Amino acid sequence: MVRAPCCEKLGLKKGPWTTEEDEILIAYINKHGHSNWRALPKLAGLLRCGKSCRLRWINYLRPDIKRGNFTLEEQDIVLHLHEKLGNRWSAIAAQLPGRTDNEIKNFWHTHLKKRVTNKQTHVHAKKKSTDPAVFEPKSQPQKLDCSNHYEIPSFSLDHSPFTDSPTGYKEIENEQNVEIFEAFHHTCGGHWAEEPWTDNFNGSLFKSSEMNDEEEIQPPYRAMDSGCYYNNGTKMDDNMEFWYRVFVKAGGSPNDPAF
DNA sequence: AAACATAGCAACCGCATTTCC
DNA sequence: GGGAAATGCGGTTGCTATGTT
Image (tube, rainbow, N blue to C red; front, side, top):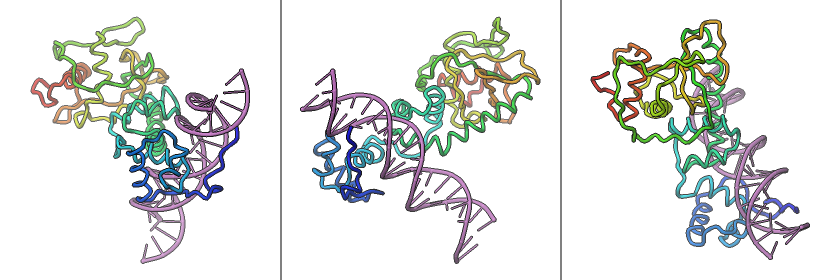
């Protein structure tokens, strides 16, 4: 294939776009669309190459672009998908309406990469703690549905939702609760005393009952170094924490007197 | 206040893939 | 079916804002 001459050789402009250029591009696309990027700049009267116009439109001028900080939910989705897909930014962007691959890529390099590095360090350090909760990711990440459409299950605050499994881990007793628990962190707002969850979990949820100080946490198991706290600062026990998360995820008030 | 370092991000580059003729 | 053109994608660069010394 013969490579098209670069912008400079054609006397085309490079570098940051001006407001005037943006306006011209927007006006042209609004009127004529962008069926042919290569022809567009000439037709619109822009001294830019088609590639530059496309990039500017896709990454900045599109009306459906979502600007501003990434929400916790978006950050988690990026982390989950990156763990599964790697640097396939466009594939990740496809799961985040309004976010561009370029924006996600930048955000990853400037924010999330550090968090992953820190988390790995933390997981390593966590092996010295007692009774860490662990998760086993089973299948590929999926876009989490964070709407509160779950029905509040019947439960007793004294009842343990965990059942023993032959593997030595404790498993959450039914699929609906697993699903709710998996999505718990997306409901957290200011209710959870924890950092946003960053690990890849999307299958059954397990809680270790047999890990001790000497055991190293290895993938696919993950440390959960967080918890839920009462207003007085006391940490909830495991059962209470579980039901609290289920309850809030299902639409219950975080301040419900039951907790 | 100035110099320097770092972070954040828009934009570019070159290769890969898809579409068109 | 094959080559050229167009588009898409991911890595990288470089400018600007902000923080630190």
